[in-house]
Length: 497
Ligand code: SF4
Ligand code: SF4
Image (cartoon, rainbow, N blue to C red):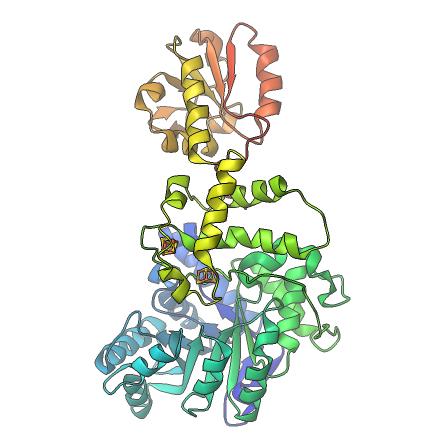
């Protein structure tokens, strides 16, 4: 592991160049005691690999991140350093901040916080608000006087001019910014100013909200190694002059190991720091600051899906509009967006004022809505398809749904048709599934179809539809077979993207 004096100052701790972000624990692990222990174990492993910088906030990972760190720290003797946070979204007054720090210290099992951040300042107006008498900054200053925190820092989601202006205030010893191979150019001036003023720079979002691995062919040239694109992207950020720590959310031991390997080779493999990615439009970073939408649209999910269009249009491959649309809407569906939500955008543009990337969100919403209708990816098409299934099953008293799996469950949740579901028997060909509960019924073996005289089988899966059809149509020649999907359909409910 490579270490550096925080802010390049000899009087500051020596921190690992790789920092551990605490927003990426598996959601499923946050719901159980065993899962909590797995998260603790992951942090302990990261410490054993030499990582000593941990970034946390009171709300991260369902509010459990501070507790996870506190538990892990109690098992280790090596020095670890914590960047914790307060901010206008959770605290308004100086007293709020002091209470917050008290709570964080207890959860983290520490007597002081090394790098205390005022969290997520979006613009100069917000900055002035945190500086008001009796406000957030006052509380942070008092905490420093009381030796509850060591260094005052700020995390910034504003334009670089505002960042430069804030640096000129000479209040903050460290900043945390969202910097990656997609947006690094806009930060170069800030990095220079921070170096000049001996201000620590910590980066988050080195994979640009997952876009870099998703479009990895565009990023292969970040360096000449054979490493994976995420590794290259992390190395790239770490090699930019003036970056002290690059944060990474690392949900598995393998990822921790890979990222540590990058830090070990940081001097051997040179990144192309002049890397150019020809993107013609602004891209959504997935930061989520545009929310909440006036009418409840999940804006970030929609805008991140739209990024695909920006990247495709910025590349040199010719890809048809329908293919691009197909990919975008598969992603939107995977993010759980339903189309009445999209059509409800009233173009109030409130989200645009909050957007960190200054994206014309309402225009993109219009494009999404029009394109969904053009290619039949809209809600109406889905409901028509389900209506057709219902019609074909009109005279069947017993309907086999095949396979009884997540996909079918999501379709049935979406459909909300208890009369249809009452007639269903759930089938799966995997013996591991037989007898398990599925939507208040039990998953049955395929031979149930014959034993119970079932006359209709509905294949309810997108990706597996063809192979299931081949199997079922040979074995159950007397059954009517109904396929939910048509060839031109997108995957309605794939959450694996
Ligand atoms: S412009 Fe549309 S997406 Fe944005 S807040 Fe208004 S309604 Fe929501
Ligand atoms: S639309 Fe803007 S504010 Fe919303 S997630 Fe994307 S970049 Fe962030």
